Figure 1 (spheres, one colour):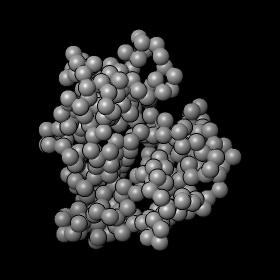
Figure 2 (cartoon, rainbow, N blue to C red; figure 1 turned 45 degrees about the vertical axis):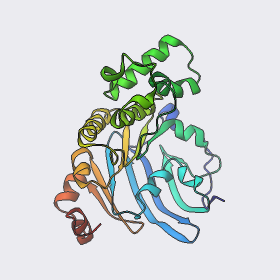
Figure 3 (cartoon, one colour; figure 1 turned 30 degrees about the horizontal axis):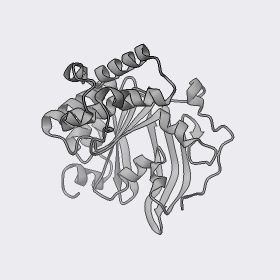
Figure 4 (cartoon, rainbow, N blue to C red; figure 1 turned 60 degrees about the vertical axis):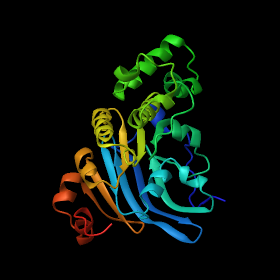
Length: 273
């Protein structure tokens, strides 16, 4: 059973909905610890994810990257015997307290997974699904949202003549961009990406990276990646995780050129991991 060791805030209705009183840090993590049973997976994590930036999270397998990412939208609690202490705030609101609506949080924080996971629906219905859940029924409005989202995901020109065809007929790279369009359709503040190109070919990877660069002025992105070159190409800041801890976090150009910790230098230069 999931347990949290933090107390909920009084204000559980995200102030982000009114865009009130928040700083450049969209997420603030302070002293975050997480255990799976007795296994200490995250250790005293302090990390900010800034507005309208791409934050890359790098590190070897099993170092806590994906666990941290899934803590940000509370998906980690679906695992089972999870205990969390510390503080994670989204736009100044504590997300770990019982008073926080997980549904409200996830309406503002989208997630893109390692493997594309389109719904067993048409391309159109995949993108329109979220807006419909949020009460939009007007066909003209839905048409506009679908087109705008697919354009932002650099997919419109490839699918505009087959919107009513199954999403499963798309290539892997197209499916991943469809999943990003599905996130964009509900106008999120943040998109979390867990190795979104690891299952894609180089051409599709390039298209997803280009898409990330194009949308970062509209949405904040946190991306877990094993690909050092990818982190260097697309991110503004990079955090290096090792054994459940953050070794260092800095502007990407600085971390890759002049890291302050020898372990970071060893990792980004392929000496381990």
